Length: 309
Image (cartoon, rainbow, N blue to C red):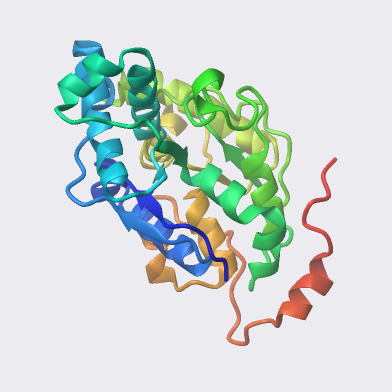
């Protein structure tokens, strides 16, 4: 459908473990939309939070090696679905800009500093966009009320993210509206879900995630859409703990952005990993009939995807 320069794909560790469905749906959706992903050969862990706390240069070097792999492959952009990995890559870019000699010495190789890092949300928004996505939809999600949850890192910090508004981002909102979804106002779209405290302070994560789930329900949402494996885990896998903390029942499916896009594109269920979610989304996702609607039917039934109050 679309012809674009190949993009280096850095899945990161989470997408090979608990978030394998995020990896699966990301690859499937990008392929369906004509985006060419080239997985970095022999990529390594970005170091995550522990490396940055132990030694900032070690953290920058670990992430920087993946940028070096992209440079060697002559790829200008690295895309990672994980905001934590994105933060690490952005940190490596900053470290090279500020301390190029020390960075390259630690890396053991010269680095030109020409590779940029983006999230899957930014890639889809910039390379595809709401209009093109709307025309690619085969099964409109008309009337499905969902709230996008961006979390802490996806558009922050502003000086390094350089994408969307850090406090009131709308890029995911617009992509969801392009699918036909109703996107109600959600004031907690960038609040913290508890992040990595699930093991050390499960009670804190339960309360923070519970507040998000409660507000999503009060907003009239039938589901939450995320673009972060850690956020998905806290809101979906730990939803029962959040319900106990809030003394309430939510039952809200928490889908990855790529999963809900893939469903609207008509991609097979097994290519999206929807069955791996703890809270099943099949009770809220529109049933796809045997006969696929024509493109003209999709456009006629839905009108402009960019109407926004």
